[in-house]
Length: 367
Image (cartoon, rainbow, N blue to C red; front, side, top):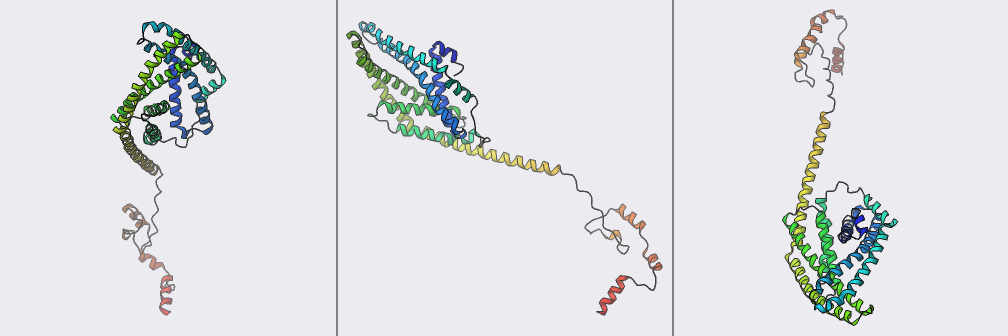
């Protein structure tokens, strides 16, 4: 929108169209990711994005009507073509007024505030690690359900407004599919192509019906000359025929799309793929956790060696091979060299004194 600003101010037709398309894509993105936006920002987006889209649409509608009228005028009697000039001039006057209002709106504080808030949207971090591919099917399903609901209302007696509502839903579904990853492969591309075809038909029908409505209003209020009214009637007849043909084509195109179940198959494929992605993500997380645990264990300092217990002379070290703290052969030699021989200790002991262990044994026997 900002990139087209200068061209829009200059009145460029394509730039104004791109602003309108950009605002619609923004609306689709806002609704798709509404759960991760704070309510205050969401309320502002829902109010101001449609506002600027409507202002750009007013200018764009004038451009579309002028194009349609000129195209259909080629099929009229040459004598009537010149009588259409007041009609084209009236459309031009409407465009000038709509463009002036658009310029004023683009210069307003309201629009500048909208751009600033869109440049840095306040996003919740509750699902910051969620993968779009895993959540794509859940995000797509509500939009798809709305498309089916609107399409179910179409029949030969449906008013043009129902076709327009379906067109809006189809367009939003197409934008959503373009935003989510193409994880369904061929079906994703095929669904996009079918939606684009249906959207184009519905758009053409909407433009023609808008032209019919505009001509009715012009004939009733403009106070035009009889020649211009006659030319407007001829143009109105041509557009009405075109409208009926487009209406039939729209009904058939929707019926083909609905019966093909390509959208249902696409949703199923996206769910299957999302499950695979979720499993892969879970396995990767488990592997990473295991690797971190192993790294943490290996980084701990080694436990200091426990000293061997004291061995009495009666229990030579060499006989402790099965003890809880085994001692090396070198340690055995050192301890053997420091130990006092049992016979020497016995000779130096006072013969009047018995070992405490012997006295304890005697007392136990006495007991």
